[in-house]
Amino acid sequence: MTFWPQKLMAQNVPDIAFLGVCERSAQVTDANQLLAHSILGLKQVVLSHIFPIPLKGFQFAFALYDPPNFVPAKVYIWSPTGKELMKFSMKMEQIDTPTNIADGQSEDLIKPIYAPVGFPTWMFVVPTTPPDVNVLAEKPGLYKVTLRRGKDDISIGCIGFAHVPAPPLTDDRIAAIRSSPHAAKIVRMSLACQNCNDGLRFYAGLEHNEKLKKDGWTWYSELPASFKCKCRRTEIDLGILRDNLHGLLGLTTERRLDISFTRLYEQSVLEVTCNRFEALLNQKPDEESVQKFIKDNPILLNQFSPERIFYKPPILSRYEGDIAILNNKKELLLIELEKPETRLLIKNGGIAAPMQHALDQVRDWLHLTDRHRSAVIEGIGLEPNEVTSVKGIVILGRDRNCNAKHLRKLKWTGFDRTTFFTYDDVLKSLTSLIRTMAPL
Ligand SMILES: [Zn+2]
Image 1: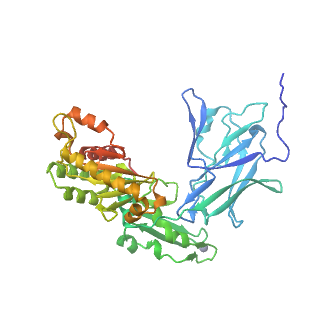
Image 2: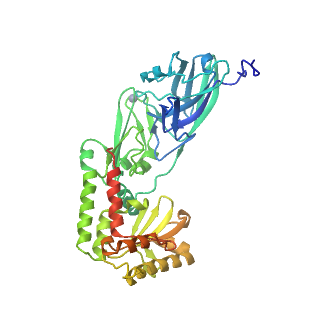
Image 3: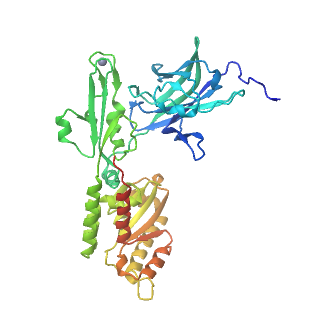
């Protein structure tokens, strides 16, 4: 005997809900051979440095009510100005067993993974934008999603596109981009009218590129304010693009975008850097040579996750740091570099005077920062509200110059807000970074 109604479907309630867009979604089989829907990054607001933004590759997530009784319908996505951007045809396709799912075609069809009988329920579906769709979200705003049933357009959700201004391409920002192994040095993008094919090709880079220029690619900030194609059907505002395309430099994660990236580093180049750094360290160089090498090869600072890097930052008028980094947690790291041959330990395992001197130095900086927070942060070139906390880092010495047991203990010891690394730690971190680098 059932104690719930056979049919729970309420009248006048849409039988599709729009949930948002997700970064990735897949139907996967778990260890028990059960099918599951794996979804990554479901969101209702898409943040972007640039507009227009191509919608190709976006995955739109829906929930569908009572799949066995679902009547085919169309779902529309509308621009903030009321222009129809895209539509999905939604209909059920009968399949017998879940194994038939893997035919990998007809994006418009919804395929039930598992539909319980006799008790209506919601099912999750993610139709992918067909690859031939060439649609742009032209400007920030609220994009409405509707379901068409007969003559009615029923609201089933919306997706917000918001513009995040790209940080200016200052020296400290460029240094941080160069510290990332996955950084893009060039971002290329093209837009074309679907009707007459008239279009634009343009790029942003860490610097101008003569070859691209010769091949007809325009430097992004030299784009006109808007583009109107020959047949006059396509008109695109380029204002946001020409002020912000550089915001995609340093990123290579946005692969769904119809934008191509040229990687800044190849794995082999990093291996060479690694070997050269080790050779330099083995020559027992002075502090200045090491500083210069790191400045020329900021990839060595990648382990600190920099968003901005400042060399020789003033710490009020009293001191000068070697490097300051604003990391991705908005922590300001004040870094003191000493020469690789700096003595770390004395015979009985205690801290040697040169190591203590470096720690004291950084402690003085932190002390001064605590007392004059805003002035120190502004002096470096940041706004006080950009920084959540200030920490110290000391890089000095070589592992091989130390008794292994004493060194382990030293690395385990905490020094309040200061962390210490040997140059071997820096080398090791670059080595493991190279290992993790996958081809773009
Ligand atoms: Zn045209």
